[in-house]
Image 1 (spheres, helix red, strand yellow):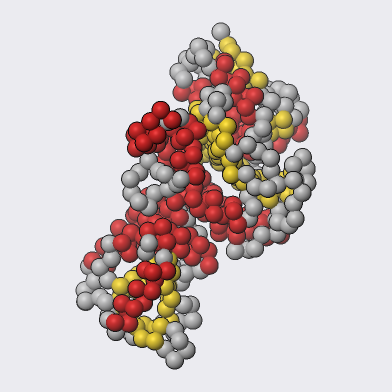
Image 2 (image 1 turned 135 degrees about the vertical axis):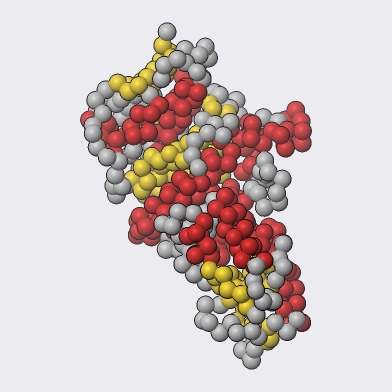
Length: 302
Length: 149
């Protein structure tokens, strides 16, 4: 029997909870999953890498056949997902139904980094190397950031990707895009999305932190420990610098970070956003999903 | 004697030669270990090791910690960092402060003038120690410069 998981028509970090709920319900009994994206109209980088993480988890769950994916039917959506590099990665995970155009992923004006797999340190080198030239132009000319901010951006991207390499226990994906965010800010933003279906923050930190937290130990506590307190699973005193560094960078440029892992989601919320700092009791979803948003600089109207 | 270590060259030998960025902890570890080997096998007595970051693109926090903080924490010689850009400082400074360490940075004008970066108390102590050991002197411009060329 095949279980259906609907992909939201507008698939971003907000609608991700609807998707995660559908995934959690469908994945309970280990049946083959069908991810239905035929009605998809738009997907953010977070949606795209999140969908790949779901496919990765479904494969790892051990169903005999690969999960199914129904591709979007709208031609422009299909083209966009292809250009964003989604289908190049999805082909390894899903049995794809629908006509996928034979286009290469490209670095268009808005796709700073197509969906790219991250499995090892070498992949992080490639990501950082690829992004710097394009990001420099976008950050300075379109977002109004100081040209010096480009290196900080590359550092933040590197550290976000390294969370996969060092903590997930499996591979993951990263994508970077710039777009005009009409709904929330009415200005341009650069978005970094990173996702994996690995062990998640709670499992990663459990050996060193669960005793300290006692009965309070949970996905939410693990996220707080990592993002707010800078705690790492390693005892080396230099560890935990990565997320702290990302926070410093985002504080300087009025950016946002949100991390979802397991049944919880934590966010550092800038003034322009109305997100909730910590949510617990969400539908269980494997691994970790990271969203970083850097807005165009200037006065904001929340 | 001043020993000169070209980090960009070490990086090129450590990872694929096409990358110029010091990113990821494994890369940092490999680069630091190579630097340590070079420091340990210097033919003459070394008083100052100049670690030159010229040509290095981005440094992330993990590499700053793995290379700079650990070299300073376990240092055997006086370490001076040169070729440090604004972007490099952004990664190195908070990492040093977190460890309550300081590093000597050689200003880019080539005159050997130094500043200390990192935790303020450690930075002041580092400069005092350098002058006391006559490895550096106060200049007429009110700065501190290496006595060795």
